[in-house]
Length: 443
Image 1 (tube, rainbow, N blue to C red):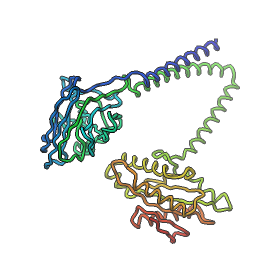
Image 2: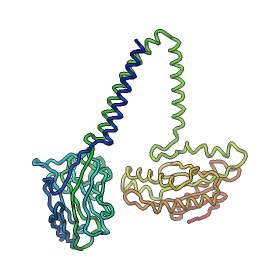
Image 3: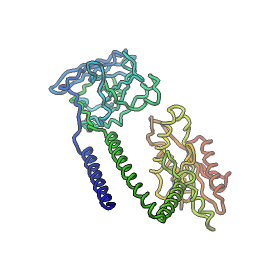
Image 4: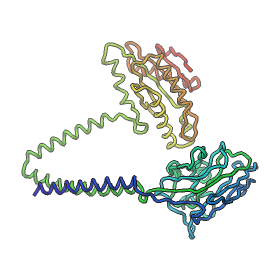
């Protein structure tokens, strides 16, 4: 009876695996639903320009077959952000917008009649009573993205997760952090507009159509459903196995002792594994404990290892947190660690020492080579792109381990060199060649 019961459970498990794989395959390769916005969509549309904001630009719409032609005359005025746009309304007769949370991407068939240096701005306007106020259009959330090279890449495919909420809208509405991200719960409007930095002149934009597509069931909902099914199956298997185990325990005390011993062993292995978790949870690089074995090389050998240390500190990082908040600060730290990792060698060991300070241990590396690596990292950081278009620099302190030197003194010399780099203007490299008072400047 027990063997037959196990065979039945195995068959049910196999069936569940097949159903899961088929469901995932259908979700990935199956049909999608698409919302098409164009001349035949039956939606209300209009041309809008900056005259409603005190500007002087003039926008007008015409048709060419199945296409919209947006003629835009950008005229300089006291209004600092001139624009023209075509706006489609997704609101129903009751004014309620369309839920696009399960849609994943937008395919935009729009371009200027001639290539331009500025882009095409695409916006989904969302309503949420948490921040929107009746009769105030600017209180609706702008989920926006600006697209360039529309002639080289036509149509443009936009992942909706890549859209952003403009900072000016967040500041203007004093929006709390809970609503800083893109939101598509009740989209009331779709807009295609001239991009930022548009110069006075006459422009023509050709809009063929907009396709908003996605799965009938979102990936998240599907995965939650499969997770629930597997959880129920696991619980069923667990209860069945537990009953079988109880019977076996009653019949064989020796097996009970073996299971208890095995459980203790697993617990010990789990604790040992936890002790080896030496990664920084935010950036994924080593923490101080993870870097500790490097400094044991000199203690466990009579020969001083060839080892250099680079201390790295983000310049004025406190201003980033104070200005943009800790979530942006965390993004900067993560991107900073990724930039360092991408520009170092495979045998170099990167660790977050604390806050905005990082340490790079360079085995088999002389002071001269470590200085070259530090300067390479300094330039990479200075030239990289950062969240919120921040301009980021870093200061570096470099030291090579001396004969008979303790790890504490070695670390202190590198840290002292970093302190001098920060005191001498930041965005530079300073090296300690022999002792705490002997510093070499590198830029």
